[in-house]
Length: 132
Image (cartoon, rainbow, N blue to C red):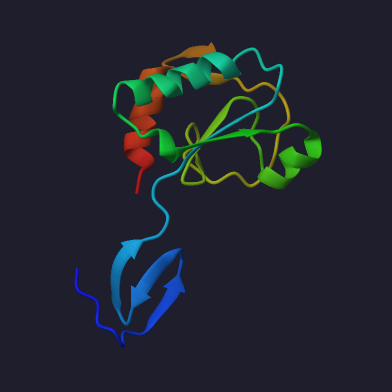
């Protein structure tokens, strides 16, 4: 990549742009794990997510762990319940950016089974789908 000394640069949507050419993104994929203390499913879901690191399928620096300590924080973050995984701001389950909040334990229906724990295979499938 060659940059001219006098190139005009500006920021647009977290990207450095030189004139009309995008050279690289500032922000890579981010996987955010959100939970509240005391959630019975958070630890196992986080363990499933971390297994993907150990298997070399995602990088540790892609993951941000966020504890949501109270309802005010839940409102501010549009927290969907514990546990929640966001990929680049999109909910792993709904595939949408959250617009409301819920401060409770979260229950998912995956392959017809109700569970509070996101399986490793489900997490990996959604990461592949929702990554930039």
